[in-house]
Length: 550
Image (cartoon, rainbow, N blue to C red; front, side, top):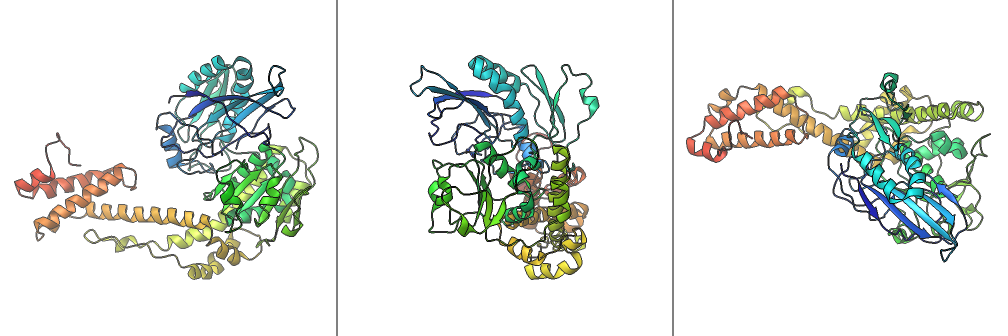
C-alpha cells in the first residue's frame, strides 16, 4: 500500500461552517488498503473563531487515489457485519480543521485542514487517527505528515477477522476488523493480544460503529419511526447546527438497518455548492431516495417539498438527556427560526416499544451500555423483519434432487408478494418480535423501496450461483464415460467449453464449490478432450505447459 501526500488549496465556501468533518463520494477505479491520501489544505476564513474540529462525513470532492488493490477488496467482499456498505466508487474523507487569528492574513484568520481519504468506511478508527495526527500536523506541517504516511505504509492489510496493532506517532491503535461470521453487536479484543505491547495500546472496540445513544439522544422517542423511514428508503433531510452533528446523525440513521444493506444514497454533509444541488432541490419531480445532512438554514426553505425533515439542536456534552424533539406536521415547518422536531406526515406502522424508551430515558447507565442497548434493539427489530423474507425466499430454491447433470439447472421461482403476505400468519415477525402493529402494511411499502430491490437482487444472485455450483457438482459426480458413448463430437466439445466456463467463474470466486469438485471437473475435461480426434484436441488444448487444461 502506498500512502500518497497531495497538497492542494480547498476553496471552501464562506457560508459553510468552519467546524466538522466532510465525507463525500469521490470516483475512483482502484482500491486502497487503508488510506488513499493524506491531504492538506489551508485557507483564510471570514468567520471569527478558533477551534480544532473533529468528525466524519461522504463528499463530492474530486480527490485522486493511488494505492494497491489488495486488502480493501477482501474486506468489501467478505464484509464486516454492520459495516456501512457503499458503492464501488465511494471514498470516505474525514477531516479536521483549525482556525486561528493571524493578522498577516487579509481576513484576519488562517485555516489549516487535514483530510484523510479512504475506500474503507472505518469512521471510528479514522476519527481516532485524525485526533492523533491533526494537532501535530498543524504545528509541524509537511514533515509530520510524511512521517505518518510512512508509518501507515507499514500497516498490515485490513483482513476480516484479524486483530491488528497499528503504530502511529508513538501510539499503538489496536482494532479488530470484523467479519460476517462474527456477532454484529460486538467485536471482542483478547487481552492476551495486549500483553507484550509497550506502550499500552489505544483499544477501539469497533472500527466503524458510532455512539448511537449520543447521536440519537434528542430523538429517542422517535427512533422506531426513523427506523421505518430508513427501512422504506424515504427522502429525509437532517438540519443540524454543525457539520459534525449532521454527519453523525446521518451515519447513525444509515447504520440502524444492520444487518440489512443500506441501498440508498446519503450525504452526511451537503452544501449548496454540491453538484447535485439542483437535482435535490427541484420541485418538478419527487425527491430522490437520499438522506441529506445540512447545516445551512437556507435548505429549510429550499427543501420544504421533501416529505420528512429532522431538525436537531445543539448537542449536550453531559448531564441529563436533552428535551426530546416532537413529531410535527410539515406545514409547521417555518423558513426562519424553525424549532427542533421531526416534521413529517408519516404514520408509523409499528407501536412504540415503551419498555425500551423507559429504560433509555429513565435509568442512568454508562453511555456505552445505552448505545449497546439501543443497537441491540434495532438489530433485533431488523432481524425480525428480515427473517420471514429469508424463510420465504429459501422456499423458492429448487430441490437438489431436481438438478440433473446433463440438463440445464432449474430456475429460482419468482417472488410473489401476495404469497409472502399470506405466509406471515404462520412465519411472520410476531414469532420473534413482541411489537404490535401493521406488519403487512410495512412489508407492502418495503417492496417498493430500494432496500427490497437491493436485498432481493443479492439473494437471487446468491441462489443462482448456488444452483450453478450444485449443477457443476452433479456433473462431476456423474460418469462422463457412460454419457459420451452415444454423444457426437459437437456435444462433447460443448461440454468441455461449458466446464471451462464454470471453472473460470470458480476461480473468480463467483461459484461456491469445494476443491474436490474442481479436481473432478478438470479430470472430466481431460477425459472428454482425450476422447476427441487429434485435430480437435490441438484446437481445444494448444500447448501451454503441463497440466494447463483451463
